[in-house]
Length: 301
Figure 1 (cartoon, rainbow, N blue to C red):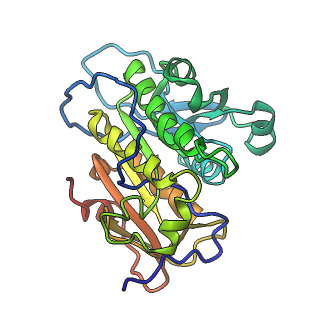
Figure 2 (figure 1 turned 45 degrees about the vertical axis):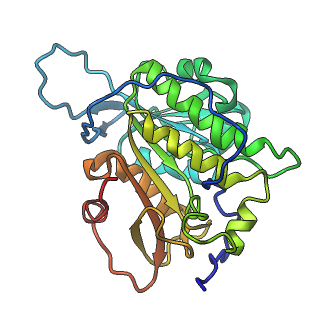
C-alpha cells in the first residue's frame, strides 16, 4: 500500500481538489478556441527610481509602459513570497488583497514597482477585472480558504474564486495564468482514497474536489496556464532541491513555500512551462536542475 503524504512541519497543507461527482456546477461561461502560443514575460531593470523594460522589437508603435503581474492572495503565506520574488527579479507587481490595512503591514510600502489594490475573488469576475486592469499581463493565483465552520468556503474561494479570476482574465485579454494548487487533488483516480492526507484535506468541505474542478475549468479556458501542485507546505527555508513530476504522480513529500513561489515566478519566464500541470516536492538527495530542464521534462497533456 502506498505511503501516506508526509505533512512534516507544514503549517497547513495547501487545500485543493479531487475528482468526485459533486452536485455543484460551474456558472455557464462561453469558451473560445485559442491557439496555444507561449512566450516569456519580460522583467524590468531598476535604475534609480525608474523602472524600464527590456522590450523586444515590434512592428507596432508602442508606449514604453511596464506591464504588471497580478497576484491574488497576496497576503497569504505563499502569496507574500511570490511577491517578494517577483520584485527581486524586476517585475512590476499588482497585489490583490481583501484587507488593505493588513496588506500595508505585511507588504513593502516603499517599492515603486508594487501596487496594492483591493480585490476579493468571491465577489465576481467584473470587480476582479477592474482590479486586474489593462496594465496586467499575467495572473498568479495563490489564494486559499481559511478553515472554519463554513463548509462551502472551499467552493467560494478555491473553486468559484478561481473561475472568477479566469473570467476576469478573459475580460481583460490576459492570456497567462499560474495557479498554485496541491498534490493529491486527483487522489481518487490515483488510488489514494485512503491516504490520510487525502481524507484530511477533504474534511473541510471537499476542498480537493473544489480545487480539481477549478483546475479543469482553467484547462478548458484556452488561456495559457501552468498549474503547480506542491506537496505539504513548509514555512521554513528550503532544505533540498526541487523534484518536479507530471500530474497525478506524487502522493507524499513536502516543500518550502519559498520554492513554490520560485516555481511560480520561473513559470513566467520559461515557455516550457506553458499548458502544463506540474507536481513538486523537495528532497535532500535530489540533484539540482535548471528550471528549463525541469519544465522541459514534463509533457503537455
